[in-house]
Image (cartoon, rainbow, N blue to C red; front, side, top):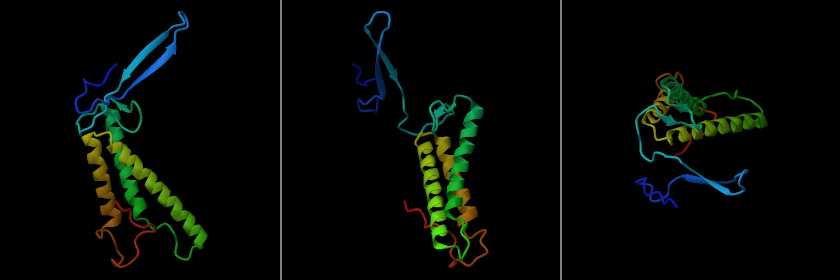
Length: 161
């Protein structure tokens, strides 16, 4: 029995799975062990798994695509957080349904960004922060606003941490 002594810092809790399969020729049991290493600290490099098993893999182009994807997700979270998509005077039920849809989309995208950052890849972390930063600069800060600061700037309440 493997207790994970070969993986320091995991406290004996190695992510491994054991599968029992019946051998069709001999009728006996075969044991398959599969170990998977999961980073528990930040690391640098393009060999990472982000959001999906095996994605982006070890190819540089796919890693760059994954970074762009995470950047766009975090940028969209900020856009949804500061958007004014509901017209004044809209019926309350319609406005409420649109607000609920926007909130659902914002939370779902925010969770995807969080899960991507949980890959512990330094590049993913940096592009997620950069996407939120640029999104807030464009949509949330006063830099590009033409309305006075006291005016309502979003259909949704700000996300609390």
